[in-house]
Image 1: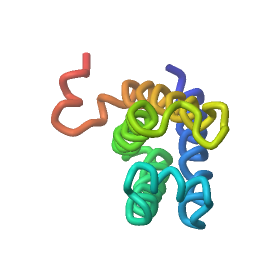
Image 2: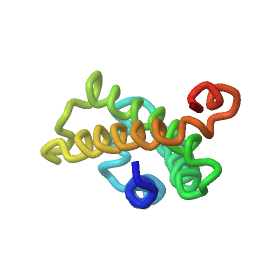
Image 3: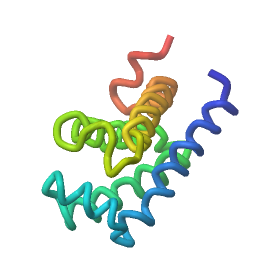
Length: 129
């Protein structure tokens, strides 16, 4: 995949992750509702916000892209599972925007990780031709 496209995808995912932080860190009522419903309020809300900040930064640093993409997949994978098991697709009448955004972020992070798999220590060598 072309480097410019990958860079654009990395920036897009980092922006999505970082943009949501204001809701988590400012205790927006929707964010508090979501984390209360899954039993993670307030520690989970703040902790996941910190992890999303770290993942967003790691996606922007060339040597740590694979870590950021993997961390993003883990965080967002958890969010998708919470939607499917406890929250539902539609949360507070959002028409599923949070869920579909999470799926988009997960898929794009998977694409990024696949394209940077050679950078992963130890196992990355197996992908070199």
